[in-house]
Length: 101
Image (cartoon, rainbow, N blue to C red; front, side, top):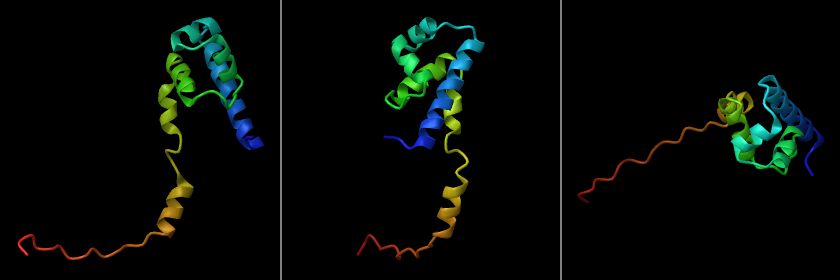
């Protein structure tokens, strides 16, 4: 079972996708057809269900013209960069071997 914080994030994502569809005045049938998924799958996406593949979420975002939003996931990984910098160890390289030996 997913943690409640993760469930909340997925629920918000699904709600945002639904709002994007409604703003574009597209029916669930239109989006599902264009994304090549069932209306039930779109329903699950718009509710933020974790059982739907990321590929299906991406297809729907693409239909809505929002696929590039996925490129922002983990783009500015501030914590990861801090952890990387704190643990950065520079190793000396071994001398190159002469290929004639």
